[in-house]
Length: 56
Image 1: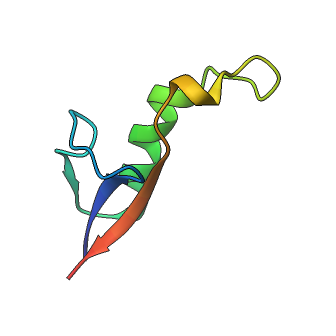
Image 2 (image 1 turned 120 degrees about the horizontal axis):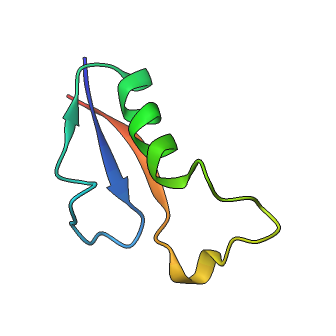
């Protein structure tokens, strides 16, 4: 299986361009981007929401 990261608003960007061999690699990629944010200091309105999807 291959996985991709998708934005909820449908916009393509440098994050959604990547294709991953497994879910964990995609998760780790997002963790590198958002891992330093804490829930209390994050301004989620300024950041897109991503999800990991399975490619068929």
